[in-house]
Image 1 (spheres, rainbow, N blue to C red):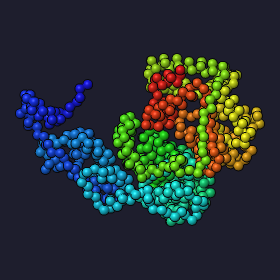
Image 2: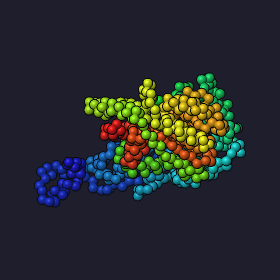
Image 3: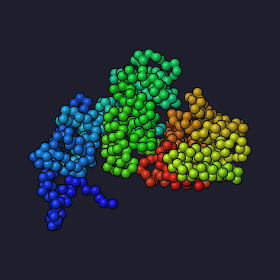
Image 4: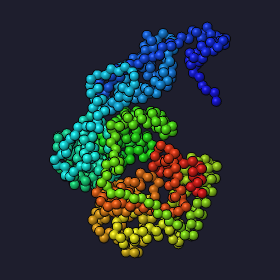
Length: 626
């Protein structure tokens, strides 16, 4: 393949070389009429501060000729290396400048011959100081930058007197960090691991603001429906002086003026979406999103709705700030600090694609540096050294001849169907059928009756599971049993009833969730808790259990981890054992192996089912059905 040469490269570099080698260049006189400015350009910057913004000025010189910031920015944003100067000559922009200044000129907004940046762009402007370019900045900018760069040694604050309990050292640091955000007016994401106490850090912070007189009325907390009760209970326990309004019920108030009588209003993502036209009419003091991965999709209506809310301060809380791809990070920051990462298209072109498709380390470095002060993440291994150990193992189940034949027949059926579809329609148009086929095979691994009600045979996995439960009960253990399939939970429930083994149960239709939790936590006679993964994978504190059984290993490691963290969390004083039941030589075993291989091949963590299937090739899928 021939390398492409830019016309001006040809004029400035190759014509002189050809002439020097004795070649006769026809039209040389005409070429000489194209003036080339051979000066290497210089650039200097000036930064001045406004109330909530910074203005950047730049002076670009090619020898004695100056280039306007507007023209220079336009050229860099187009990734062009040559620019026409005031005298009609052509100047060459150093190639490294295109990469060095693309975010600077891409994220700034035009403002009277200057570029204007938001207060959160301090970290972006700070990167100028890594270069050798001349920079003049006013004292206010330098002071703010210095404070921001030292945020890890932020000022310590006293805990509120009406906070009931203690904060661990890392939780106290999180409390101080929330004050740092409050002082600057930044939005931030508290991204500690599941089960490390994000809720208590935020409650202590809100109580402290109240005691200082800084907690203005109208603070909105948005959570998944399953977490409303958890927040109410935690507030009663740690901050009983906070006045809480439950705005998550069908009979919720119609008069938003009532919000003024409460310190914190709790609602759900679904109700905020439903009531958004009314809620946008009010300006809140704080809007806080818990389990904020709920707004990870920038195109989803829920994400669009929360970005419409008006507030002075914004926080998000999540143990999984990125589940699938970097665009999810953009979606959260579009809520936290609007405009900070540019438009979705800009972010996709300049961060998502370079990071995920090209594994570009420089883009990773720039993005990490930009968001660093606004995301506080501590893993369980880093901060909860006093947590008991957790042991994980896979339990392989051997299907009998009847179940194996049923599985193989269905596998061959879907394999034949998919191979034909691949040939006729291609992989992209066959993904729905792939999902269906894999779903059916997974159900057969649990029990063939989930696919064919008339099936009369046994299930190796169900037998192994019940045998395990009987052993755990005899040894005095308590266990959580998770399944993606409610009907599988019903089969387990039937077996427990037949053996008169006590249990409690929770799925999406369960109304009295908190009563079920209390029953399991406080009643030593109930050894087992059957839980639907979707309904009970987050928001439950179940430290009475010391075993976690995943009946059908979820292909999303983050979701599976969240479910395990219902018991392996602060307050647990017993070693935790995690069992994953896998049918041997089946799609379950192959999908887990394939996922591990994909994880090593790519820097992107494949942790959602949708993303996982998008990453599969036709050969991968054929292997799953082999």
